[in-house]
Structures are given as C-alpha cells and as structure tokens.
Length: 165
Image (tube, rainbow, N blue to C red; front, side, top):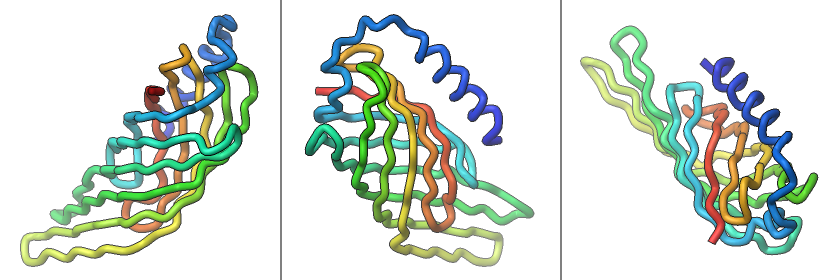
C-alpha cells in the first residue's frame, strides 16, 4: 500500500519543483505553522495533525498527533495512535523548497482485540523522519514526509498541507 502513495508523492514533488519562482524568499521561513497530512502506515491509512515553530532559520520544533488506523487479520484487530514532539532541522534548497529531517520522542498507545481478549500497550518510542516542503505561497506549503516511529504504527509515508501564521 506504500507504493501507490510513494509514486503519487514523487509525482507531486516533481510537478511542484517546476513551479515558477513566484513564491517570495520569505516562504523559505517556516515561522509558526499548523498542518494536516494523510498517508499510509504499517497498519492502515494514517491521519496526522501537527504544528510547530522555527527557532532559527535552520532549527525548529514540532508536535504531532498520528492516528495509524487499524488492521484486522484473522479476527484480530490492531489499532494505534501516537503523540510526539520532535526537533526539526531545515535545509532551504530554494525560496520555495526546503528539505528537513527530524528526531523526536513519541507516546504510542496500541490495542489488540480479538473475540476472547483485549490487550493494550503504551510506550515511549524514538522517531525519526525526513521530508521535503514546497512553498506554494508564503502562507501555504505542501509537504511529503517519511517517518519511522517505534511501536505498532511503524513506518509512515504522508502527503500534507502546512499553513503558516
């Protein structure tokens, strides 16, 4: 399920890289932002809500909530979500494009249900990710990201929109 989303993300990235340089130099500054993303994880379709702030032109922080969805296999359902915070390193490639990497800690809550039992687990997990952000305007950006978070959710690839305020 990751392959179709990865292909769509790469096609989007390629088409956005060809945009004219109408975005102002200020668009490279992330400022304070909120965003939403949809993607695919080891479990199912993933929804992510995030927000953060630049501390310097190269560094910032980000907090996120990730719902990894649920997966049913042989009458057993697994679902998970995570809440985390990350340090984000930013590398401006042009006024419209920035690469970024992040590392953080996530509180992961997972539950496994079957007809005869329910088991749940919570843990603190390390997470890391890389991505590319494309400024469509000084206030709106599109973002492609790959993250690896320990626990049930695992690897996530997502495509999202980020709104600067």
